[in-house]
Amino acid sequence: MNNQSTYDTMLVALDIGTTKISVLVAQKVSDEGLTVIGIGKAPSYGVSRGVVVDIAQAVHSIKLAIKEAELMAGCTIESVCIGISGVHVQAFNSQGMIPIKNGRIRPHDVSSVLAAARAVVIPEGQQILHVLPQYYTIDNHHRVADPVGMFGVRLEAQVHIVTGAVASVQNLVRACMTAGVEVSDIIFEPLASADAVLSPDEKQLGVALLDIGGGTSDFAIYQQGTIRHTKVFPIAGNLITHDIALCLRATIKDAERVKQEYGSTLRSLFRTSEQIEIEMVHGEETTMVSIDEIARIIEPRVSELLMMVHKEIEQGHLENLMPAGIVLTGGGALLNGIKETVQISLRVPARVGNPHVPPMFKEVLSSPVYATAYGLLLHTLKKNKGVALNELSGPLMNRVFYRMKSWVADFF
Ligand SMILES: Nc1ncnc2c1ncn2[C@@H]1O[C@H](COP(=O)(O)OP(=O)(O)OP(=O)(O)O)[C@@H](O)[C@H]1O
Ligand SMILES: [Mg+2]
View (cartoon, protein in one colour):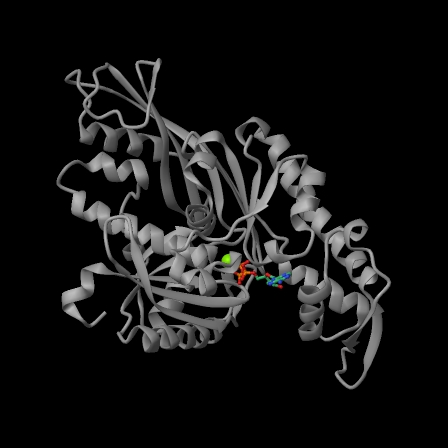
């Protein structure tokens, strides 16, 4: 922002999705609250399966969305918090241990144990994005969320480490910089979406989030208030649209329209013999197709995605971590019947999660497609608050979101 007096309270989120770019500009009104003052949205080009594949095209799309948000907010955007996803993102749990020298745990002991937990071999070409504390153990028996001030001789930390391909991160940051905005933070997208749509109780009891976007479906499990597992699946809404276009030899644009208007994941629920018109691939003729036929195309692709999710849950023995079921978000969650299909195939409760936006923005932003962008805003709000609390103690921040350093600077 160029307005120095409000600089500290301005938050900007940039969600570079496979199908759309969204920008949200907000003003911090209290430690817990924000008010959205600018929204920008543009179709996304140059992004495939969550990663930038054509910087020039991505820059153009980002600029359009930024401009729109700037016009509405009446300010210049200089720095943004962005999301990252794609199948290059990998995650695993790790632990670290240190002896406590003076009996009582201090903030720097927490930093040291987290540094020990992150000291793992990262595959060539990958870079750590997040080291997220799950819990700490003191002398093997106390399991605590914040160990500072407690006594013991041995401190252990369990963490969730998220890594991403260096090249993909560089392309993303380069696209933003070329579009004229600095990147202040990069957040793994399902973490942002989870903050926007999950309730604290769901996170405490144990719940899974599935953000079905255009290019990827991002999965995250929370339990006891912390992140337990994350995974990116390569099947999402665009593939379903392509399947419809391919099977019916229709234009991609019309396949998308038909999917949104008439598509469903469950033929038995929405069975109908009604016929609809669809544009042929050469764009000069239309043909009639039954709504049932469209569902018949969608069903197997959704089953394929849910089989991957099922396998991930089974292989990781994650069933017991999600008694509150699955919350579906992202544009794919708008597909008719998806909630019922998830309930039937994964045998867990399911609901569609809209971002928990303040009442006055409900009409505009309360859609699963804004889950990531709104979650990014919440993250920057939390971080902003963290800066204010910095002198009180380091672990307050660590507990929420531990970042080893401002690693964007490492790349450039
Ligand atoms: N009403 C609807 N019914 C069915 N599908 C929908 C509907 N609205 C949007 N979608 C699908 O949602 C997908 C886009 O979702 P979203 O905006 O969350 O993705 P994205 O953030 O651009 O992509 P990604 O997160 O994968 O990079 C598209 O495939 C679109 O077809
Ligand atoms: Mg998305």
